[in-house]
Length: 85
Image (cartoon, rainbow, N blue to C red):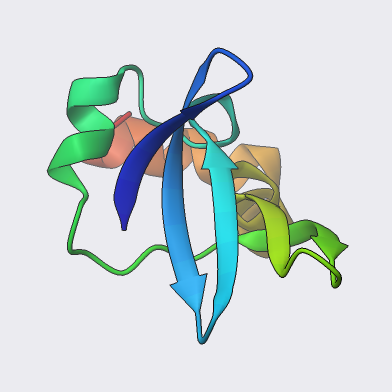
């Protein structure tokens, strides 16, 4: 993962093969660009929200994936338990 700015927002950039994924910081649980930079080199799981096949770019959300797996109640529990996010 790397960091870029798109439409004035800090975004995490990931690649799946040759397809570029853009994850805006507000679609993650990171509070600022510094926290996002600390995640560079780690595995990020996300839900693909849009795909532009012609440009080979997708937009994604880590928040939406967590909601699917845990629901809002589960996310809040994990935040409290790990004092994370």
